[in-house]
Image (tube, rainbow, N blue to C red; front, side, top):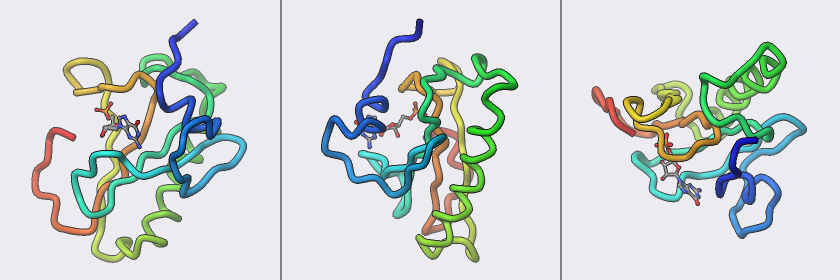
Length: 116
Ligand code: 5GP
């Protein structure tokens, strides 16, 4: 059984973190330490520690993360200029929180930005 992270508490709204989006599969909220003027995290409600742990059963949630990213990019007004979606995996990928999350970053030119 994977250990819960702070993201589970945010998903359940047990701590004060405004949500930008939530449905039965995914939740989105702003990153606490934004690396660009728009920096949103989109997470599956189910605790999946890393991309290495996904299964076919998770495809609906993983697909929903993309459609929600598209919707939020539009709401942020960054869809035309563009943005980047990033999922880090494990140590070499720079993952810090072991509950899968997609970074939606934009609002300015991002450059190479290999680390987020
Ligand atoms: P990772 O490096 O795992 O891909 O990204 C983890 C992200 O979670 C970081 O960008 C970090 O700023 C963000 N983060 C860590 N703790 C919290 C928190 O308690 N609330 C929010 N909103 N973001 C967090």
